[in-house]
Image (cartoon, rainbow, N blue to C red; front, side, top):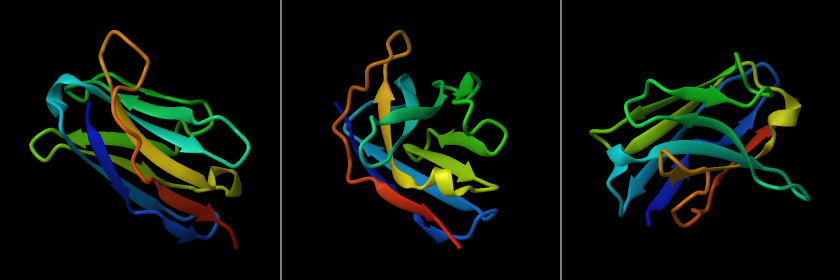
Amino acid sequence: QGQFVESGGGLVQPGGSLRLSCAASGLTFSSFYMSWYRQVPGKERESIAVIGTTGVNINYADSVKGRFTITRDNTKNTVFLQMNSLKPEDTGMYYCNARRPWASTPVGSWGQGTQVTVSS
């Protein structure tokens, strides 16, 4: 349930910023929590940020806390990830997905992701 199109990735120097966007379709967007995930080669895809249906409940992985900000626009079925003070270890493919408020399992199809590369 749900399809997602991620965009906004690119090559950035350490300390730089990027803003990722994820456009969702095929689901009642405002009824789902939305999460951003990061995957690096050879590792499991990990959840790094999640936002509740109204934008009030937000949680971050320790690795991005204080540097990344997740927001959503329910009028546009879009979730954003503002990434500041980027580090080389933030390099990876970034995906978004939806989950029901009472569960942790993503419900939608995985999109193509957007690549973030942090390098000098």
